Image 1 (cartoon, rainbow, N blue to C red):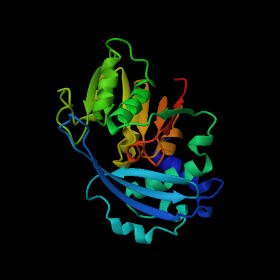
Image 2 (cartoon, rainbow, N blue to C red):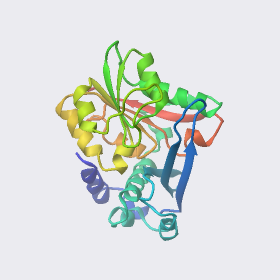
Image 3 (spheres, rainbow, N blue to C red):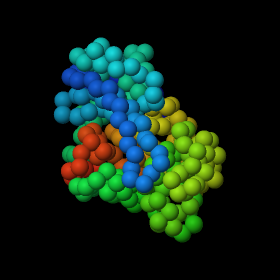
Image 4 (cartoon, rainbow, N blue to C red):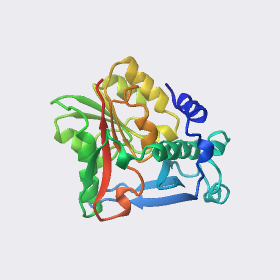
Amino acid sequence: MTVADLTAAVLAGSPSPADFNVTSAFWLHHTTRLPGADVTYRNYYVLLRVGEVFGACSFEAGELEPSYCADTSGRTLADVLTSDDPLPVRIAALDAYLAAVEPHHTAERAEEIVLPAGTPDVRARARDAAVAGLLDVADGTKVALIGVVNPLVDAITERGGVCLPCDFNLRETASGLPVSRDMIEVVDAADAVVATGMTLSNGSFDVLLTRCREQSKPLAVYAQTGSAVVRAFLGEGVTALSAEPFPFSQFSSRPSSLYRYRTDR
């Protein structure tokens, strides 16, 4: 199964995405620099609200203009999914549909993890420890990290793993590890893979999924982007998921929840 296959199944399935309307569309940009870090994260999100849930997708600078919001509220999810809108908007629509049909907070398979109140650094470390806990990382396990988040690098190494980071926007981690730009290279060298949901928004998710299937490597995904979309691939190449639906942890200092899923390989 691919993302295109999943979209086709949604469009042909029940309930119909034509019965779900986008009530609000959001374009968000925020920056983050954790204490002691020398890297500023620049994050962009498209969000589509459908009923009680939000579909979410990150995107790169310049990929989508804020003006899209004016033309998206009021459309049906079927209209968005069959349009020529930018990929992040279509991923957000697919995420909104799947989350509306089965919200994370009511899913029987989900393990709720409540992140503690605190500073951005405290909450980021708690979040990334929860993600790292999805993998059985023995001493010396090589873990490809697709999408570098420095607290997650630390969480992997603190468990005895050897982190193999890959990111399009960084040259090295805060701890000095060199960062590759070649996803296939680090996946092939790894024993296990942890990847960001942003692989959905840049179109590399299907490639990553196929590679992990072919090599029978566990794939854990941490997702603010397309968390319900990734959930549909549990048992189809994805072995574990940390799903963080909107509003995301970085937008609050109070306790908030993420939802972990596991499946047998």
